[in-house]
Amino acid sequence: MTLLDAPRFDEAADRRKRLIILSAAGAFAAVVILIWIFAGFPIDWPWNWMTHVRGRATINAFLKDVERNDLNAAYILWIHDKDWQQQQAQLAAHPFAQFQQEKGSSMDQKSLVKAYGDLVHDKDWQRHRDMFTSYPLTRFQEDWSPTSSNNDYGAVKSHQMAAARMNGNVLVVGVFINGMRSKPLFLAYDPKTKTLTFSPVELYLGP
Image (cartoon, rainbow, N blue to C red; front, side):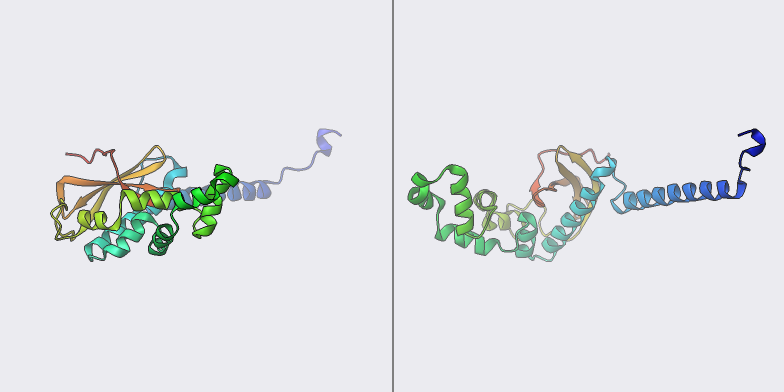
């Protein structure tokens, strides 16, 4: 083949191809920017942005329940378990120690744990048991009730999320309660369990 036999350069097709590539790149950039805005302008890696979205939404809903003094609804969000009362009753009615004593000699530990989960209809029973023990509803009410002496903020009437940042595997969120900038609240959202805890880590929220 000679140069005279080479196909003629199709300028229109090349222009269309470049337009398609540029349009796709622009659309992708627009989607990324929209997700970043929706996530609250996080200073974090993009793969953590959906954790920001879910964590901020959960904390916002939780604090709105506290503001309404609907502590039962707030507790459900805190432990991410709407059936916690039934699960707690099941654990109390069938103590693991008793089940272990009855079945322990015939099962290895892993099978024992699974069998007990089947009995109480809760495959995540160990985490729930630990949560009910470490932070029961009565203690939760002492921390969040507007009339409790243990509540450092009094009646929670408003909240403003000031900052959010991933710390390890959890999202730490700094919140101003009732406009008190001198005493921010720091909560942690676990994307794996979707639960909330008080964060030992504090974020810099400015002067």
